[in-house]
Image 1: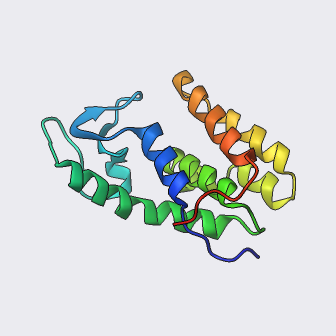
Image 2: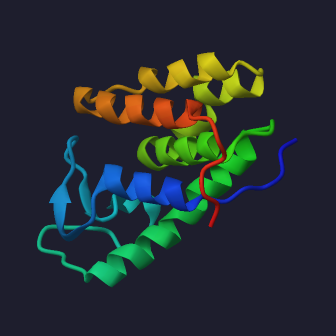
Length: 152
């Protein structure tokens, strides 16, 4: 069993870059109200809605709060040792597809079975809507990147 990990600085920067930071609520690519760094109602309070606005600092604080559940889920689901880059890529995926989708994903299954290359390829299965494919390629590349990333 792997030891508990946390997001690395490089991983947080990559994830925030993928999500963007928005202080005014908007509908994401599938019509879900979102604010801050990818915060949607599924992550908990506050529930974004039309006209909602938050400060940049509030967006970052909300991101840190939201991140805890996704870091926790990756730690629960992954039963083998992984690199910082692998962990950070999986947190990014989990953040985007949710804890339920992540826990049952072939990314987790393949990594736990020891097949790193197949796990990396499995990121690409989460390609709907189609505009997510670029993100999935970036996550898969991060997952395969050598080195250990920059821990916090």
